[in-house]
Image (cartoon, rainbow, N blue to C red; front, side, top):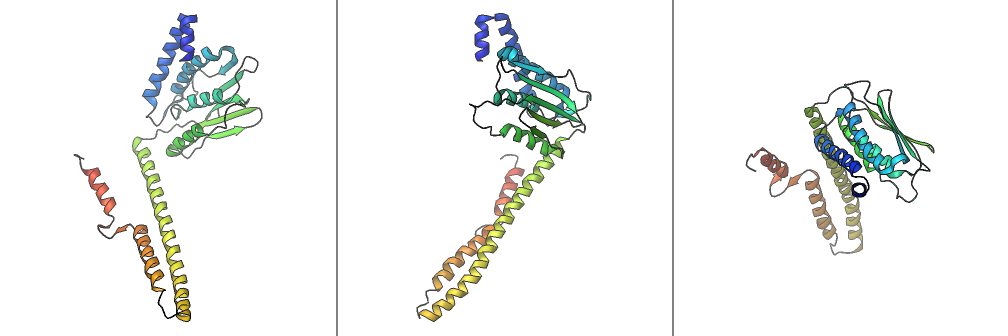
Length: 265
């Protein structure tokens, strides 16, 4: 927006071109953001539009080399992944006329490769890696193929696998459901491990306290840890096994299922 503001006064014709490219960027984001995959050709065309915006901002300080189209018209990648990599390259590297940033996009061994010369900004805080992690997670839902990241003192390279088999929404949804079920099962196992550890400690420590009580005093103080800790172990067990003493086992799951099946909810 700052670039656009300055162009309106300095060069109205360039401002018009900038606005047109900006509108195309927003339109593409809105159209593609909820899709699982888009064709590589669509991403390349969008990248060229995005590049035009960057060129107006950085002029000759940034050099792009992007192919016109993919060698395989059926090849697909995760939407907006190419744009994110271009954005990251500009965000985390020095871009000046004295030290221009060179970004090259090309195909290699079934991957779309994004490569740039590495000249990291010293004033920018360390990258959180959220953007790259987002791309990794989106690929993990769709395929076993993984993105590859290579970095040395001279270059930074990211390889995006190009997919040729269309993943149906049902397959994607099933993969998401399986992932949620796995996480839920893992949480239940962790709860059971915690309960069994608590129960084992109870069974080891309480007999020791009983013997200590018998051999030291006639006052049955051991009854307090037996009942107090025992109540805690029982509550821990009910939580681990999903049992509610008032509503029974699986009450929460049954209510959730009922509301999900209720069209008027």
